[in-house]
Length: 282
Image (spheres, rainbow, N blue to C red):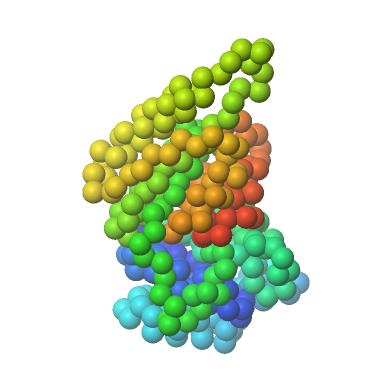
């Protein structure tokens, strides 16, 4: 299948977070030379089919997107069905799905809502969950441009895909990449002392080896390697404080194959202040 022109899809629901997500999606579409499709789910019972009339909400968002990114090819669609179901189905033929972390009806105490989590867990392409997307609902608030892209790299196959996507994002934005590997003391050390300095060095060396080929492919991307002692989720959440975005695989080492979203990725989605990009193979 030719995936070169598969669109970036963004879900809107009328909330400021939805319009902020549209700005991120439009930026991604222009950056990677793809069209943008703005999708609205009516959220009413009924068969999964396209609505007869395009909804005013999606049309308004399209007008805004064209104003932000002149020349961008934008289409709209309105569907019956729950937002997560609609976005997952649309992801079958997309290059990326973008969703605000919490839209209309979400609890303010939750950083990411059920739509973001379900889409990230079940989509057939990468998913960008934009936390606090309402911050970018208007053109007066420029999107972040200079912070590094942070990628969680634990050596797993899913992590390899995340590293590839993170280098692509960093290269397209002209920013640095920070690769992070969390490491912890052995759970059972039988009262023997552990050389933490050596363990940290080993983790960093393994991280460097995993990134060697990608650094050669993207020689213009500055890379910082960080081997950090601690559990993966808290380490990555802390790294997100100064990140443009965090890129993760859906499931890391030790995850159950039947789980579509691992515990570390879910925790980062729920707590990281920066947008989180969950890597999946299209």
